Length: 179
Image 1 (tube, rainbow, N blue to C red):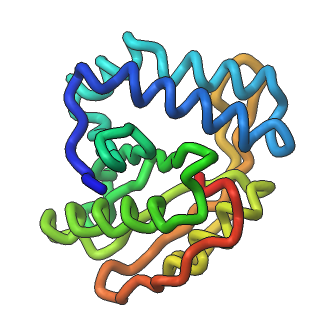
Image 2 (tube, rainbow, N blue to C red):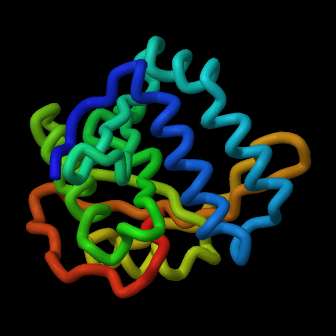
Image 3 (cartoon, one colour):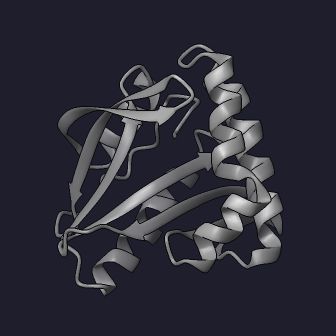
């Protein structure tokens, strides 16, 4: 297993991983129209290149035996003590093997190196599998928040945080979707 900062040439691979994972995990949670809208908004080549070029997102690509298997995206936040885990997706057939947890450890280390004390993320309130996985990884629910993302769609999320001075738990998630 290897985790490395993604290069611009990796962005189509990351977009493909996102489409595969979203279409597998989210149909029971989010309307298909919203899934396709969000994939188009976040994972078009133009959107991904713009977010990397502007420094809004850094992508980390996880490979197993050279095969792209998972990714995370992260960024600083306006709060000086926080770093945000923006995205975390693992290919469905590779879930339940601790790869999501490895990406959380990796992004946590990056945040700690930047003198951040808290890792924050948002997760759909109906994504019980991901919520449980994040809770086992040491996250707590800070608040409930709704985000208008346009086109009549709203993200109904929990904001979750994890203190970076607390050791993460190492128990793997029994759930299939670690978003």
